[in-house]
Amino acid sequence: VPFRAHRGIYVMVEEVLDAGTTDGEPPEWHRVPGVAGVWTFASAPGLTSKRWTPGARRVTVCWLDDDVLDVAARIAPLISVIYKAY
Image (cartoon, rainbow, N blue to C red; front, side):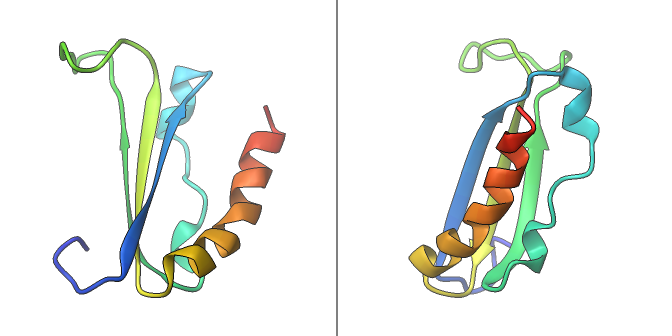
């Protein structure tokens, strides 16, 4: 995905309250109009670094093939559904 032409990226960094949820099914970011592709990374106890503090985190990178602000407005409802659970 990062090697194809795109108009920008949308990045989300989340602290996951339950470490087991980092293995769950991610939201359907790829179904949002204007999202060309998605990569999701999650922390794991076996991966340590001085640059990364301990904890459960998930990083999602969406590559966009439409205007960044327009896609951000389309992504917003998915984010509100995710955080409504917290």
